[in-house]
Amino acid sequence: MEKPGKKLKKLLIITGTTGAVYAGFKYLLPLVAPFFVGYIFALLLRPSARFLAYRMRVTVKGKRYHMPIGVIGGVEFLILVSILGTGLYLGAVKLCAEGKMLMMRLPVWIDRFDIWLTGSCHRVEAAFGLRYDCVADMAGEMLYNLVDTGKAAAMPFLMTNSLSIISCLAKGAIVSLVVFLAAILSLQEMEDLRVRRDQSTFRKEFNLIGGRLVQTGKAWFRSQGIILFITTGLCIGGMFLIKNPYYIMAGIGIGILDALPIFGTGTVLIPWAVLELLMGDWKQAVILTVLYLVCYFVRQIMEVRMMGGQVGLSPLETLASVYVGLELFGFFGFILGPLGLLLVEDLVEVWTREPMG
Image (cartoon, rainbow, N blue to C red; front, top):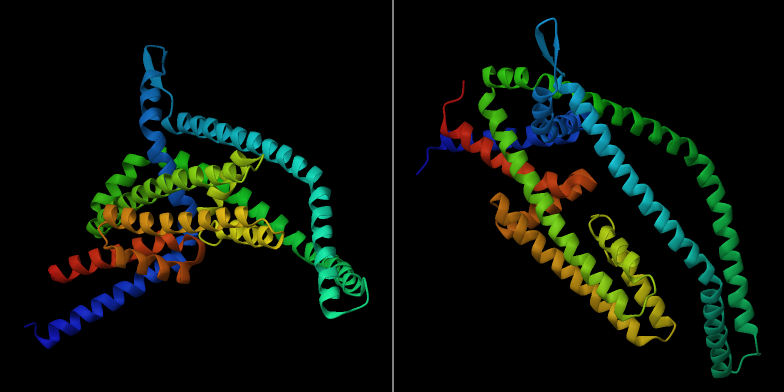
């Protein structure tokens, strides 16, 4: 049996470590995130940049000089960003074309909805013995008022948030520039940074945190990639079953939306199923509902099993840490929750196993 003093010491270490990890994620991480992302890019680009730096040598007056690794890494970074930007641009063009086709079909859908709504109103009038068109006129007036109210509310919202959008775009540009410069400088000073880390008093903690970041990051990208691939395939198949002419784009869009913790497939599939049910198309409503349930359970089961299995957490610990992370840190809590739990466990183990000070 452990002594009370030892238990109290361990409790204080757990409490202090948990508070330090939370404060670091909440307040310190947003400040160092651009430099951390730049360092990750530097690690990814370093092998190829180092190879090219030692191959691209110039001889001047008998002395051989090689291109700075930071310059080569910066060029590679720009090429990578250009390729990604081109892919996003082509995807945006394709989405705009699909959106134009949808807008051309919108009047048809509005007419179908109008016919369904008018018929429903007439059935209500006949059932209750009301004057013909009284319910239909009332429903039409309510819809017109709803549209006018939406327009009146949208304009002030757009005017108020336009400056915020411009500010966010400017901030995004500055952060992108900082990430780019941090990647170049990290490539150039990689060896010095490693020497400083190895000579630091906290080298053990740095190595532990770095190892956990790499392990959790790999597990997150691997699990999300596999789940995204499966969910996208399921959504494409579901869209094909309901004979949607845009089944590929719709399936890809819903699959990407499922990767966002705030949204998920239910953001699209549930309202869509309800609308089809109201329109009287039971078959499509059932297919969309079943598709949502399948995608939901696939994500919940695979997410917990794959993340937990790869980072060393049980399914219950993974589920609890993901939920707490989302509650504490919002959008990025899905990965910060499990990472924080792992860091707390590792740091507590290190600090309780060895005498502090």
